[in-house]
Image (cartoon, rainbow, N blue to C red; front, side, top):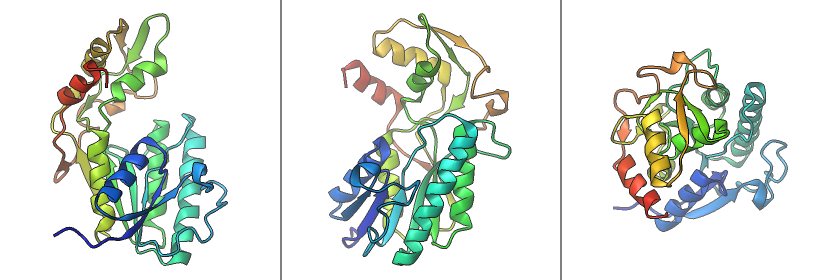
Length: 255
């Protein structure tokens, strides 16, 4: 039996995962309050938050930092999370769900991982009952990494072992968790198969009919401390169905 209609706020609602999460909630008949700068709410300053969470039962935070600087990323996630949690406390929100990432451990050298650790710490120590959803990298992650370093037809890609997941599957889990009771734990979610990031990059470029020479290297934001099983989901992870090959077929078809 589907859950009764609820009112859920999505922070970062105009971003990739946020918009998919909002769509998944609406498809289930639930009311969605969109929290984003495009909707007049600035989480970094707190402007526009007053009153926006009235009647909201749960908040799903799918925000992302627009910087790759470590200190700036940590500051962004710490500040926005603190502002959001305080607004939730005042509004009586009963469940805070945050999208994090599989693999972060102290000390995190990668800026995004450092920011996510700070965000998780704020949530765990905050005033609102919580659930943390740690996702593996998305299917388009290899293409993103190529874009970071590509120059004159050459790109550096770290030889990471990953278990990539479809963004739609991540959104489905976030919506489901947000409609449930707080779990006060970290839940790993991943795709069905492990992949080598360099091979993912090669296959993605081929599907897009692009010629780029790939240089496997640990020089860059992902160092050798992320080798091996570090980025793979832990025991008891939620495994979602969409494969990387299915995503590639969509890319090859021009999707």
